[in-house]
Amino acid sequence: MAFAVRDGETRLADLYQRDPCRVLFPDPEPGEPPQAVLVTTSGGVAGGDCLRMEVAAGPGAHAVVATQAAEKIYRAAPGSDPCRIDVAISVDAGAVLDWLPQETIVFLGARLVRRTVAEVAPGASLLGCEMVVLGRGASGERFASGHLLDSWSVRRGGRLAWTDTLRVEGETPEGAGFGSANALATVIGVWDEPQPFFEKARPLLEIEGKVRAGVTVVNGVMVARLLGEATQVREAGIRFLSGLRGQKMPRVWHV
Image (cartoon, rainbow, N blue to C red; front, side, top):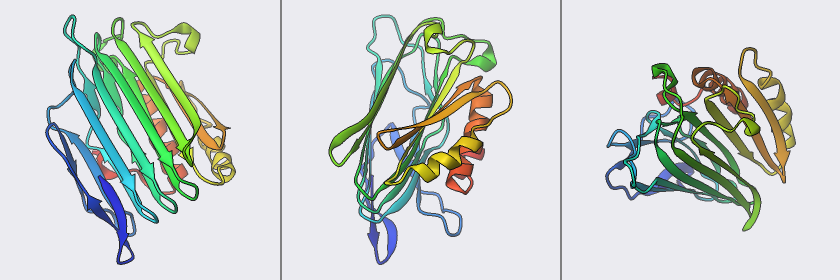
């Protein structure tokens, strides 16, 4: 999926899709950029499935990409390969892209390998969010077995600026600071001048309750973390992202 500026407006320039991945284009609110909503028509992802998504914002384009609902990663059959999700994001000079998928729920016994790589040109801006929920807490399920390998990389001008990988095998690792938390949200911000956004983010993360949060800047990339119970992390994440963007999250987040 690619966006480009034509006749002074951001428009869809290219689209290729096949089951089980589809893209919807709801009408944006007045004054907001075009929105694309990703849908997994199978209702979830199972062991052995492979999904690949590529999103590109051409020079000067401005777009928002979200998902219709939380992505469900089902329990894997014994001996099956893990499901794999590969996401490639490209933001050209002068472009602005908000990558705002809803949470990924990793069921007990699920096996997921996900890799997200973002190439952000000088002069471009990217705001990205990924939230992982381990187990279906509302059903009393704990992620006592399974596999999660979730990696993020940001490249600027062809050079690696930041990379991070979370690996969980069964019970969440105490050494990683999870404690009793079952959800982790990571927010990535890439701008030529990240300091003003960093200063704006700090008070937004002064969250009351059981959600632990923090923000830092690494090699010009702003990284924020929110850790806690899934419902509280989602609510805190919505408030944080809305405040950082200066506008509401896409409507699909509130349905």
